[in-house]
Length: 179
Figure (cartoon, rainbow, N blue to C red):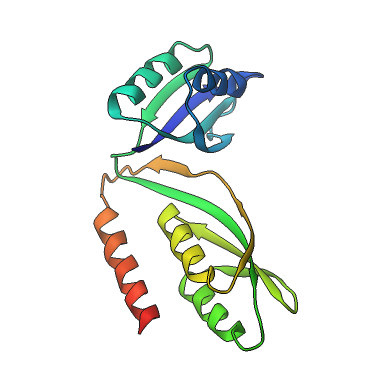
């Protein structure tokens, strides 16, 4: 199972290296990694996605707390949270399918950030499911290149779990595309 970990650290040289070294020594691959300021001066947030069962992730969290400069570690996988990613997609287009591609772009509220005769570069922002869905739809036209940021996440203060709503919206969008 994939877990999303949110780690608050002191913004010091070598912190990310120590954290990634901890994962490497234990044979874990970090599937997604995003690092940036957490809002408070001198504090950074590291958001990472790793695979493992609950017991293994609990052990990793305990090991993370032992590292210098680690302030807080939270597994936000099953906690209502807001998750976002940014993806740039370079897609092949031909005159006869350009309108169909632009229709998909509009449905996903993506933006065209570069336009050439035979390709478009799109900027897509949203939750990881949205990224997967638009890429899947655009694959039939030919995705030439992809650049993807790591997932970022913040726990919802409202504690409202929108997973059910996301699934309903996703299903509705798929039905409208297929009809």
